[in-house]
Image 1: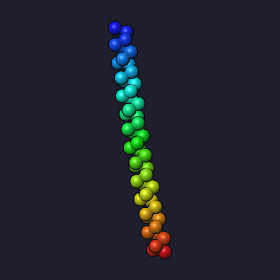
Image 2 (image 1 turned 30 degrees about the vertical axis):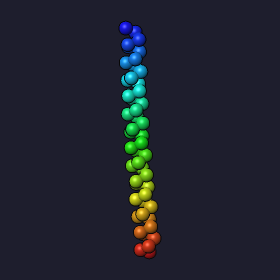
Image 3 (image 1 turned 30 degrees about the horizontal axis):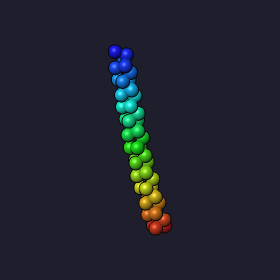
Image 4 (image 1 turned 135 degrees about the vertical axis):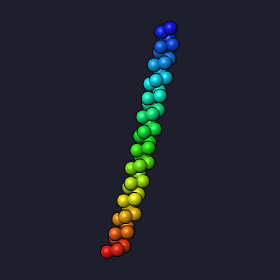
Amino acid sequence: MMSLFKKLQGLLAYEQSHLTTQAISKMDVTIRRQYHAQQISLLRTDYLE
């Protein structure tokens, strides 16, 4: 019975870390997109001046 509990605990810990990894990668993509958009807008303003 104890080993089953340990297995469940391990699965929950894995699931939590997997969700955290997904969240971090999504944030990373969002930050990259925002940075890219900022660079493009900077290029546009340089061109207009």
